[in-house]
Length: 457
Image (tube, rainbow, N blue to C red; front, side, top):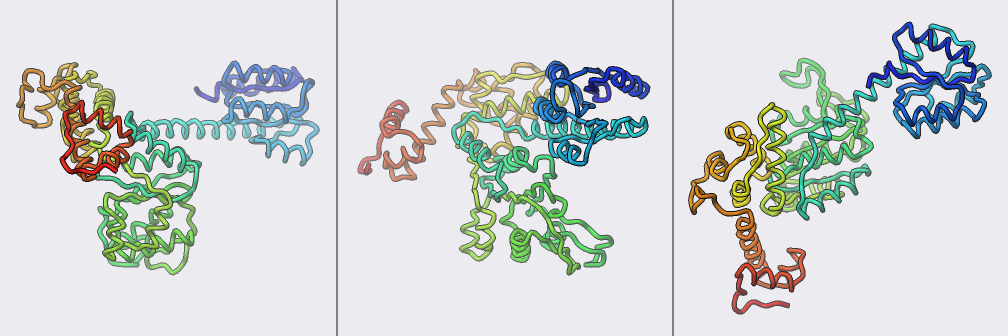
């Protein structure tokens, strides 16, 4: 809604209210006048007003109380207080209560126009920010129904509101950047920058310049001063992906920046204050890198205050079909392509795949299906063709059903878990987070026989 078209004037002096209306109408503003605080609150509840011109003294209540009630109804509303009996104390109280500006009566026409124009500019900035955040949140919306990912979502909710450092681990393509973005957008820093750096993609000779910036002439090719990513993320979140690929020198500087809140540009002896929340990610085992002397243990403890591990796609089979359908619909809508739906046999083909590339690979397949498949209903044969899977085992006649694909996965997954735990059913049940009796029932249902000589303690 265009905020210029909705301004509420609250003043018990009807003549003054109509005068303000006449003045603002010459600038193309749409206004509504009410004479008391109760009517002002009722108007705010029934209609959206981007701005409120509010008298301090009203016949039924105090203007400060109305200000507070207005901002409860619409925290984004811009409120300008007016008074012919104003004091510095009242102005300070109004400002502390959320007023944007203060106008003294009798009103000066140009001062009124300036205050309204500036207030509406703020209104538009708030609306633009909300629209931008909405678009970004949609981009980072995470689709999942599986229990492992619900646990990830619970961790995101717990850490997002804190300022603590988070380490995100998981295989390549599992969605680590999505988790980092979700943490940022649900934090108090959501309106600040979210700066991403893929540490593995930046040459070792340039990583320090990339992170901390440099001054002109600091090295060959440094023709101008450059701001680093730490400074670019000031007031927001810095996401360092593949942090396990950083050099020891860069690791030391990052540790110093975290501990001091200051960064030093390459070629500059001066220090620059930064207020950054650090989120890191890796697909490597940092503990093994520490043991090998390739990663600093002190840095590990600073970045790993909370660890969020994202399971691979084959560990959360329930997410495969919802994710595939989500990405398929998303790509079709963005590119004005006819919406497509996966047939059950097509879903079975997706679920039978191993997905070494995880969610990134699944998204790629969904986009290919959107482009290459012309029919609205996507068949198993079409999915197999897109994925370049040989059509065998009767797939040309419809392939396995979704239930059959799930059953095959369950049997393989449970068998591997039992093998990893030396066929100790109790231990495997704890890993799978199920009761031992439930696991026995599932093994019987799937035809999994215990290995002779295995112990269950």
